[in-house]
Image 1 (cartoon, one colour):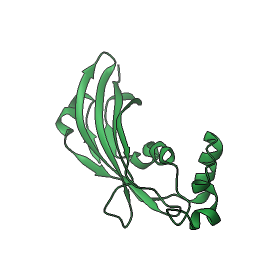
Image 2: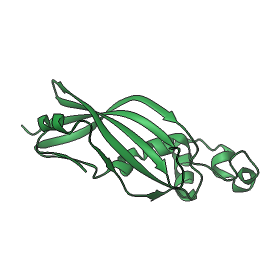
Image 3: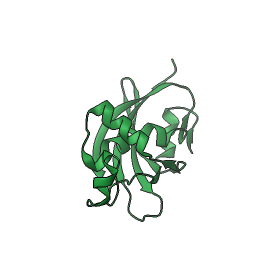
Length: 151
């Protein structure tokens, strides 16, 4: 876990990283995401067709994997004296390989920078979503979080 006693103290944690727990991506989650986004491409939903396709099975949407970052990084950052931490945006995302149905993924996140802002602090994080059994990650995302101190 990356921990700091206060938002300002995060500066001392720049360069630290933390690793989350493994999380399985099952077909029901892929289906729910397809329904929510109306992205019903066969490579995500048609197991029979996907079996003879380029990946040999259905795959998670890249945006599904990206959308799981809050779940995958939950509990990896602890900051005392904080009113809230909110998503501030993304600077870069790369989808490096598909996540096959039934795969397990986990996040490794590193605090790469901290900048003071009028609302609090903007924390820069690089998160790599690892695939169990693979040396190549599913994705790498550079994200920003706004850390608002208690007043």
